[in-house]
Image 1 (cartoon, rainbow, N blue to C red):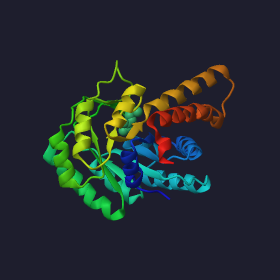
Image 2: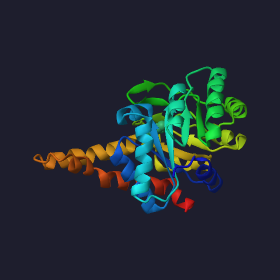
Image 3: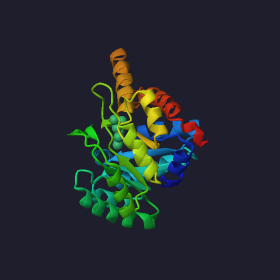
Length: 282
Ligand code: 13P
């Protein structure tokens, strides 16, 4: 059974740790992440970008696959299936397909338009018990091959967005970027803390790959309760598969090739959840 992120993130906010959102790309990613989080006994959010949903064939395929993996692998930890950076139309499609959570990303619009769009998604999602994350400011970098600039969130705008929409979590853009960082990340912890002191809902840090441990810990102490990770798992998987193929040039079984990255993904998950303090969820 899937659940929305409210319970898992409110506990994380209260007890100062973060729940990971790991983005999935296929059946193998889903299995590896769920198996490792089950092994560790921690809740997890499976993030699905629009590009990843297209790649896997559609929202119904993703939703059915995740539910089937949970059932057949006897996964008993809390699992949330979350649309990552959804457009207006994609949010409806994901909710209709059985996702338990969506992120509506109208962050490139003017504030009033962002509020109007986000509110429509909240009104549709909440009767289905689906949680909603919104973004304010703009998280830069490149995701699904689309590059964009960073705009920092402002406290009063975050407050207005929250009050007028009743969102369940907020991703305020405060300097993090998707994909690898060029140099040290420059996160605005002062504003992060102010937003956390002002809003009662959990805050989300996007672009969780490649942020130094000390900055992750500081972000958690400033109220970050959900950290999104995509690139880190892709990098360790690709490295392991590349080494495997270089080593064994006669292998052609796709199960062996894809599976050669399994332990690299699982080891990275273990490392990250220990930094995020997620074991406190037990
Ligand atoms: P990274 O790819 O940088 O880990 O960012 C993931 C993310 O924020 C998904 O929304």
